[in-house]
Length: 80
Length: 148
Image 1 (spheres, one colour):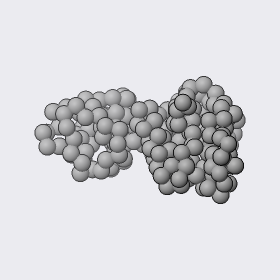
Image 2 (cartoon, chains in turn cyan, green):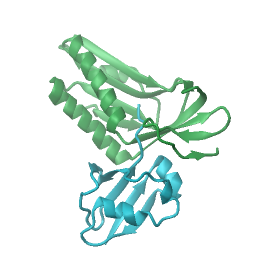
Image 3 (cartoon, rainbow over the protein chains, first blue to last red):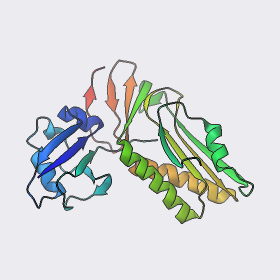
């Protein structure tokens, strides 16, 4: 199945994209998505386990993802 | 009705925020404004651009307003965050709180800005006088740097 990985700010610059389609197995977790993303050039500049939101809600590494989910990698936030 | 949490790309109007939380019962109205600072961690800043994961940022801002209403017993809170290119002294965020009494109004105002800084997916890239631009990382890790 495929999930859409969204990248922002310094992470988008590191990978040279703001959105990537990532293939994962049927029972994949957030950690699996990150692991598969590692093959992408520039992904070595991401932290070991970035903060993640699935479908706009913060999720931990063990959370399951489904086909079509929006998995956003959230750099350290700096609003205000 | 005035939306409680908004992201805008035009200048924030502080008086509009104040009006949105003013009512005959609110004896205290607190307005907090965040502005672009000229010097940050020793470097001269000429401007900032703010970016967001907009759908989620709006959701989180609204959740903060709702949680604040529950936690402090007031619904009179509005938050507006600006995105895009800002200059020094421009207002980046405005928070207005109305409550019958000042103690609670101050507490809500402080709580909302701290929660916003902790969890709303908004990022800022500072522009420096030497022409470089850098994403600010309040957690202290190395952020990606890019030429202008």
